[in-house]
Image 1 (cartoon, rainbow, N blue to C red):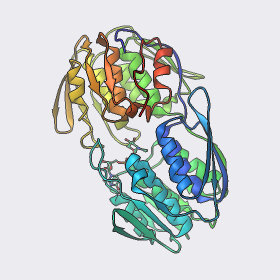
Image 2: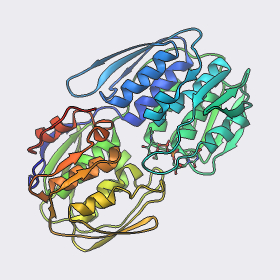
Image 3: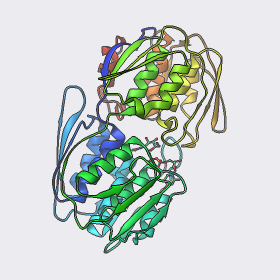
Amino acid sequence: MSGGTALSGRVRVTGAKNSALKLMAAALLSPGRSTIDEVPDILDVTIMSEVLRRLGCGVEYAPSEGGGGRLVVDVPEQPSTETDYDLVRRMRASISVLGPLVARCGSARVALPGGDAIGSRGLDMHIAGLERLGATIISEHGFLVATAPRLTGTSIWLDFPSVGATENLLMAAVLARGTTVIDNAAREPEIVDLCAMLTAMGASIDGAGTSTLTVDGVDELRPVTFSTVPDRIVAGTWAIGAVMTRGDVVIERAVATHLRVVLDKLADAGATVEVLPEGLRVAMSERPRGVDVVTLPFPGFPTDLQPMAVALAAVSTGTALITENVFEGRFMFVNELVRLGADVRIDGHHAVVRGRERLSSAPVVATDIRAGAGLVLAGLVADGVTEVQEVHHVDRGYPRFVEQLRGLGVQVERTRRPD
Ligand code: UD1
């Protein structure tokens, strides 16, 4: 890709990856055909489809031109209950079938995910919560094996508002006997989306979007048709890209309330941010000012946009301090950014970034989805042609990424098909 072009034009965001994958898992909670719209056309959806197929579901996906699509899941009366390592290893979110399976089938055998490129990611809160709900959980031969003839409502306090644990426990609690209260629950828009789908299926959930979720268990749920919430991380990536390149972009379907801190930071950097009926407009005419960023669970600054925040600071004026509070190891991509000429010093979970007028092109390697997107944004403001290798990581989170970049005026080509 060639650097130096200001992003300009319109771009449309599809449903959120991080919601769609959980909505697919939630479909397991009822026999019959559920339909999920605005499901992004990305590898992770293909992997989750395979997880569901191996559990005995029929899955059909019809992508649309814009990169979203309709997914129909046909869930049998008695799904199988095992998810293998070959799938969990390819996508950690596969473990979100654990809660629904144990709630609906009384048992589940799901491979343990192991580590990944952004640090060790525990499952202790998923396990402790399911145990509180009455499941017996053992770990054997690389699998978590959970059994519970019927889960029973209880009160659960999460040590940290983990997105994955909140989702798994929510999906378990909706079919438990009695009332479950999950305290210190995650409040991300994707959790609210999951609550909305479960409610449409017949679940009784109070407090979606707050730290306390109260779930009155029901005996059974019904299939639904549901549309996935727009992807705030993809929207935020385009917003930051517009600011870095001093461009002007309308991000269709972006929801301002899902990006409040991000948009405030961009305004602090000097950007014009406008809420439109169809989404958001972000425009920038001068070199951005450096702004400090601290990642936190929602409504804080999302950790998934931290690499883009570092890339932004790398071309802003002054010095910015970026603090990562959610994932250890999420600064590993910084070495690649430094290859593009960025001035970044890491001290524990802080990055001190001294802004430079421009970066300088080089071959770099994407290590995960979001790091890859951050490197692509950096490439947009680097002199010359930047080659981002292992770009298949980025494809996992950004449907039609190259086409969308082109639509915004960037000269970019894919030199090898995605793996
Ligand atoms: C989800 C998102 C990911 C996002 C993250 C935080 C998906 C597929 N992924 O990941 O893109 O970056 O939320 O917004 O939706 N932890 C424990 N024990 C647990 C659970 C979590 O220690 O039982 C720790 C993790 O190691 C991590 C932190 O809690 O340090 C946050 O993890 P969590 O919120 O669970 O993120 P994920 O659901 O894995």
